[in-house]
Picture 1 (cartoon, rainbow, N blue to C red):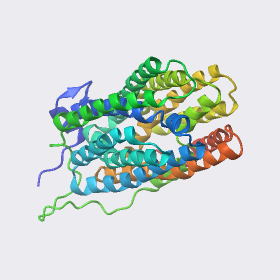
Picture 2 (cartoon, rainbow, N blue to C red):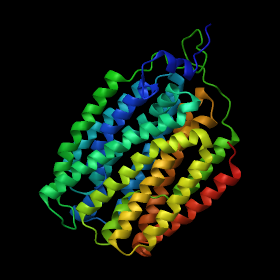
Picture 3 (cartoon, helix red, strand yellow):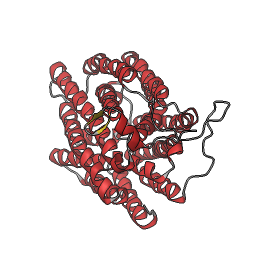
Picture 4 (cartoon, helix red, strand yellow):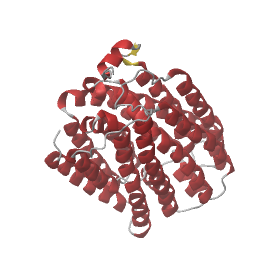
Length: 411
């Protein structure tokens, strides 16, 4: 039986874009289009729920936490299935397709429970696609360029967020001007326009992303089934998951960052432009951070990102004016740009190649499942103590997780 090809061999025999397997580029474009759509439709959901539907912060926390947590469960299973079948793309297509189908139903919602249902469907799609997609990216690049590959993907994904938010800002300015509250008509137009790039993303995934010829991770038995490695994950990976869970317990839904901005009398238009700034810094930082982690190590880069997060959340707790929020949104983007892609590259470093899908499922599962108690707790603290309290909690747990990562996890 012939030996499986290495990622470096695969990269040498396929068309490259920006020095990497073309899958990285086209998966980045798929994410760009999807994020353009999602940012238009879902980023301002907390304002739609509170301003249009009249619900409170606890409802916002439930929507954010429940949808993300159910998403996490499916990330676990889809990752394991993709390892067993050695089929990443079909699961990604199903996931992107499901998210696209449910988005137009936001036009019909009249209560926060309906928003939860649509958001659940969208996140279910994300749960199905994320682990196989990340494994497909990891399969397509070698270890020496893994940080760069994930960094480019995150940069393209976040560029889509910038485009989506710019379009949303234009719609808000055209429909309602600079009012403090989001109107139903503004949101309706954001949904109508936002579904278009989502359909284009699914089409691009079907036509341009290929997994044929990628690394074969395990032995195929005569029966045609795949024998996935039965050995457990390393203690380093399990410890990283535990520390990530501690960090995420203070990392409630980003819905609360948006509510905090409005809490300080920021207009809807300015909040949208702040989110543009956040995503611009996110996109700019992602690729250099990934490349830096290829040279200096993932752990140090992640620790710096968590430190920045802790300081930003402390800033959200203490802020008293709108200009503070502008600065904090920019710094929040720096945190995301540093950590998101590098953490996924670190997961690939810590696990055997044949179990990457499963590992990404567990990683995303820990993040998503922890987000439910984190978001519900944040909503409760917001309403019963003060809007600043959830951010004090997030800052403290981020700094604790940073110390745990540096002291306990070895690369």
